[in-house]
Length: 111
Length: 113
Image (cartoon, rainbow over all chains, first blue to last red; front, side):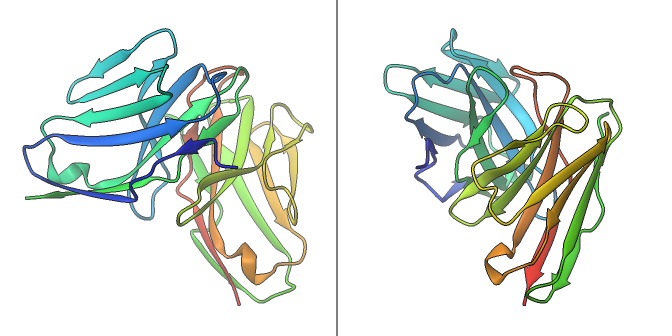
């Protein structure tokens, strides 16, 4: 059973606008969350993370929001750039080091 | 920078053949992982290892085995390939137990005919 879900398989956004990628999870014991970015023919690379004791973490153009009561995580990219076009995976971590990955959302930023 | 390398980028095998996928990391990481990535299913954990000669099953270990004889090297073995093992295989490593970020290799695209 998929414990981490990304319900939108794809998203298209105009360059300069905001991209919002969403992630839902079912296990309330997850205590750390990450976003990874993956280009074709490359492995995923770490983008940003957030601890369950926080509700927001910002790093440049990237902000991750966590709503624990809704078991919902989102990644905001502002402003979106064509180089942001990639597949984005959210991941949730239980105590220990087992990561549970979502199914991915393919973002296309249109110039 | 952490570097995780995988022995092959693309492989084509016939059903029933044995396949070794090798992964090497150069940052003295304790933990190593093998995932497969399939459309609509995301990344699923096959096996992981938190020390030399130690291994743990992930979510989908059936049809796979692993070997970790040296700290820097983690091998995934498919004893007798089947068409449903056609996938992208990703190796990752992390420094320590806990929330440590996982660093990924470039992946191996395996096609089983």
